[in-house]
Length: 336
Image (tube, rainbow, N blue to C red; front, side, top):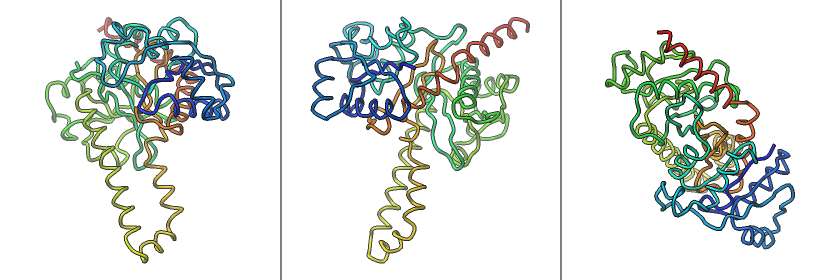
């Protein structure tokens, strides 16, 4: 399997990206196609003793930064490492594309260069995050600030397929983010989406309140991009704050440090369970070929995990399954 990697996407590129790629090559047996300045990639690899074995480089001189407007990927930054990677994916030079770069530019580039799956109305960011038992997907988490009910219906279908095929969740429970669990809660968007999801080929369990999301309420949480992004950022912020407070308590005094030593193995397990770096990032659901977005601040471990999940995305034939499901949904709508 060959994964195309934007070597200059993210805050810690290219060093941490190259480290993560080397680890993924060694652990998962992947082939990597790097895009970016060939001279700089080779220099960083040499200075940090990073092996480029099983990696090839396609030279792309420009970089699209986090500050650049999303549309520049098709204009002044059309020769950037991200755009080149997406063109290579569209041309069939690799099985998937992974970047830790500009999220908005990735959505624009993936939509216009790689294209959406036939029948999919909008692509969506879909991060997988930890909860009380296992993990859940939040779709959409920021790609579409405003959505229509039929788009949210498709998000639920795509998320369900991913969680089953990639994360191994049997009959994923799909819930709609809302201000209450009762069927009548929410506005017009939630009411119409509820009705559509209820008759969709997914295991829809109804509305989900935000406070129940961490407590294993569902395996797929469907929302518009604005609501989803608020949930995502608050979730991450609260998790970091709570873990920081626990650390402060356990290191406050000699007595607390001694107590901490006794529970250290359990705390390490808890930290790993609640660490979003274990999940690497988010697939861009709805694109005609696998596109994955790693965290912008990704270090080597995070990027390695993102590569692992990207490979699972390909092996699970998620794009093929979504294509068939959306096609059946369209046929059913015509019959009605």
